[in-house]
Amino acid sequence: MSEPLLEVSRLKKYYPITAGLFRKTVGHVKAVDDVSFDIMKGETLGIVGESGCGKSTLGRTVMRVLDPTEGKIMFDNEEITQYEGSRLRSIRKNFQMVFQDPYASLNTKMRVGDIIAEPLTVNKMMSRQAAQDMARQLLERVGLRMEDAARYPHEFSGGQRQRVGIARSLALSPKLIVADEAVSALDVSIQAQILNLLWELQQEFGLAYLFISHNLAVVRHISKRVGVMYLGQMVELADKSQLFSNPLHPYTKALLSSAPSIERGAVREKIILQGELPSPSNPPLGCPFHSRCPKAMDRCRSERPALAELYEGHSVACHLY
Image (cartoon, rainbow, N blue to C red; front, side, top):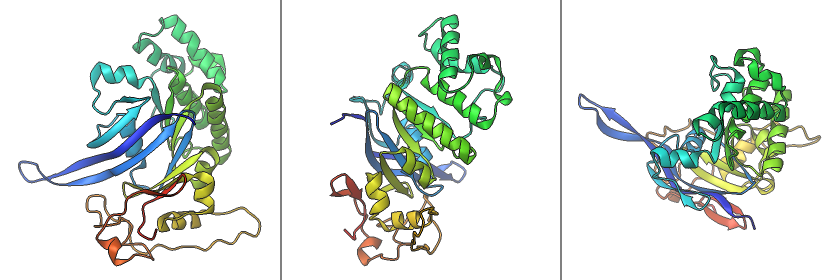
């Protein structure tokens, strides 16, 4: 069995809410609240959920772009939770990020060859000329031309810019790539090309992905396992075939029922959730979903369910089980 590359245990990311003249902390926004999961070497774990559920904050905290409030992050059998400065920089080259906006994530004043070569020169891994040669090779590997190294980001289409972002993420030969809504800003046909490229690169370089998206079809296409988040918490985690064929959590069922199906003759019951998504600054007591759940019990209103394995490889946080 493959070894875990990333192990996240009881991760929390809270933002303080301050008020008054002396900016006293009066509460917290619980963006990520006690989340645990792992990613095997060469595996893709998809994370789905509504906007505001904490998916992107989770990805950035795992990357140590954001400092965790509590919890533990193990990367390749090394705890990186408290790493800072040069120690963090030395380990960070092993995990990279592909961002949602392929234009805002690129420096518009730099040629794309320099953008891709910059990580290599900053980390003093190559001379400037060698880094430029590597940048041209990476551009070609992601489906662009070597000559494109001399162009600026605004001269490319959205899909091409995302290929540049992917090439930059590959420059330091990472083991893990966090893809945060990496195809959501692209046309559907371009989405398919980028997803296929990510799959090819995974097979070639043995990459692991933490793939964050609100698009269920995209997550189903690229992921091996899928985690469902709601209000900063992981409510279900399973192999994608199990999750899509046998969802257990009421929120997962509602989420899947909202996705359109192109299968002939497919009839899917629409589950309409009542009420509004609670605020992460004032989450409900007990189960975070109980205020919108059609099967909520008294226990759900007072006791928070733990994420527990119900079947082999299929975990759920719900008192129904």
